[in-house]
Amino acid sequence: MLLIVLGNTDTFQLWLAWIFVGGRLIHSAVQILTNNIRLRGLVFTINFLAVLAMWFFLLI
Image (cartoon, rainbow, N blue to C red; front, side, top):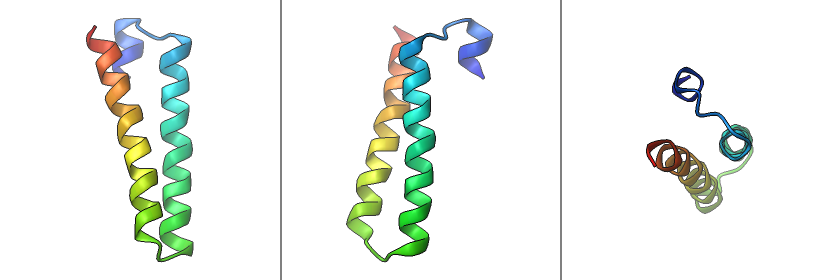
């Protein structure tokens, strides 16, 4: 929402947002279907890095 309001949407931000959405879906599937904590942590880390990159590129 903040990206839209500030008019800072570009293709890179869009890709990062879709990586986050896909990662959330994968994270939910891993949490529901398996007990693999390491895989869930890895997917969470990818999601976190995507959001962190979105904030970083918004601020610069």
